[in-house]
View (spheres, rainbow, N blue to C red):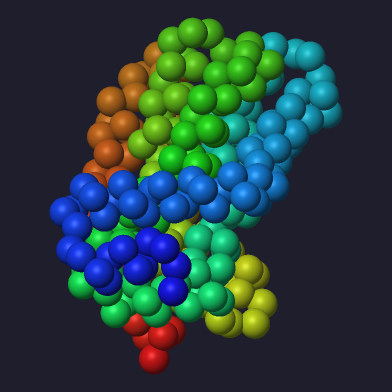
Length: 236
């Protein structure tokens, strides 16, 4: 039984106390396995940086392709980090202890998903403007790019948590996880990249941003519940 699971089984914590406890544990685990956290970020930087070298220095062409390229790179980076979301806790029995603790499992799953976003999504959001400069994007466009990623990457984490829960303990789970969640990621990709493209063409991005926000709200409501059900099935 892990330290977090023991503390939750001994005494009930408030909602924010539970979330803070899970976040601290996830950050501590991430510091012990820095490679697993840095790999998606390095992948994002390398792939996004290679496109301008391969396509050429033409500014207009780079600007047209920038939203799609950066969003696809962010999406693939998110997929790289999803398989470890529950896998290590499932292997060492931590998930089973969480399921038996006094704290509702759905709260713990939501906290782990939040930690995943903070550790993988937020770095992508912060580094995206630096990569966008390689494509000749102006300050307003870079700001919108950050906004769409800030709305879209937590949605990717939430949807991905369901896929990660469904593939727990499955041989070849990484491939199956990708096949399950990629179709669900497509709307986020379309409206995320579409918002930046619409802004660049002068049509306005309000509609795309509103849909991204709606996708985030829906995912935040349904994904933790679906992931919790899937994990309970995997533990049986």
